[in-house]
Length: 509
Ligand code: GTP
Ligand code: MG
Image 1 (tube, rainbow, N blue to C red):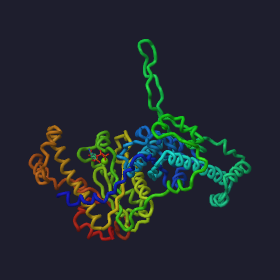
Image 2: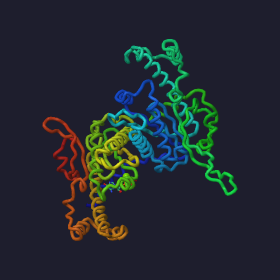
Image 3: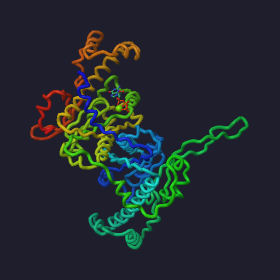
Image 4: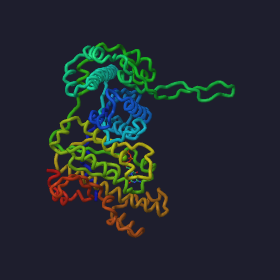
């Protein structure tokens, strides 16, 4: 099988590099947080443990990716500001926001028990993320001012709403009472009806939280005369500040000023055009097949750390399949998915309403949900292995204009599965038989498929065609009608030939 026949599909992938001098900000927020709060009985109007968990996830992300200098969050959202000259993921937008969202989700699930002990995670939490591109430091300043203003507005509303509910109003009544009320009226309501002074509520709630990466001077040792030897050390700290977009806050942080520039003047009024810009995003091409492809980040290392079987770990592949099934169940617009190794492709219905929403939203939501499932289901597949580092995935969406090209895309992935699996099977058989890795590489260099089949048969008595179908063909997860009801099935079949598609005409209808 020659892969070149299908490789042309790569040309549909669009370049999304964010060029310098633009500053990259990633903003993420929880999907359907209200439902999540209710299901997990989070305290209202705020649950400090949940906020602490969010902050801890942001600190983790910032520690893991030192190119993030500053982050700001409140309620269910966080924004991460990268240093201006970052080369993170070659500045490719979809890789950046999907990976950060995935990493955050992974830690959120992993640390849940630490912060909300006694409360079981009832379903996989997920976040949606996007990149905000700031052309100048002034745009960044407006962005931060806007988010902190939203924090204030949202939390004041929330304080009133839950005060009304806790005093006997229904949620609908509280909503009606608060409709169109102004800041001042809400303040008075809190004060007069409920005896609450908004300004006395915790800062974390009113102002949100900032995570800063700062260089501080620290004593590393003492020299022979007993004098301290100092070095600059990077330190992460979380603070709550009232005015993150003011000069008094920003310009006093040398690391922020050095990497991003200083704020020239304070913002008197947040420009509506800026807000419109922050909320705008291009849509996906209509009437095309949109494919979201996710891929495990540094899975060679993740596989090593968790002692995955080489070249294929059946449990790891089954875990990937289980997560894909979860995605199909959660996102009903996904009609077919195909996975191999640490990657999965999800095809959206051509008429999908999701295609009319933001591409970042779709990609990040799928990546985040998949990651969440992966961490939650880990123990079911690896009962004896602890998750020692958090898995994360990146994602992208590509639109294919015709069914024929979409089929070529899937063929490309399945041919890739075959080529990699055949190579890896030979490679690891040679290594397990005593050859060094470089010798095994040398032996396999330039060999064709047939030669590899012969190598396996002659040297190891293995008939390649009898190796498990999941390993040779990858996995397809899709909805199927069975006895009048629909269910998600996982099959390992040839999706290159017409046979499968002829037998399942509804999938790509
Ligand atoms: P990036 O995707 O670029 O971050 O790198 P990566 O390390 O994830 O590599 P890539 O996605 O190109 O390839 C997936 C890698 O995951 C493989 O090369 C393997 O090292 C590892 N992997 C995936 N599945 C298995 C498995 O079942 N067993 C073992 N041992 N390794 C696996
Ligand atoms: Mg990978």
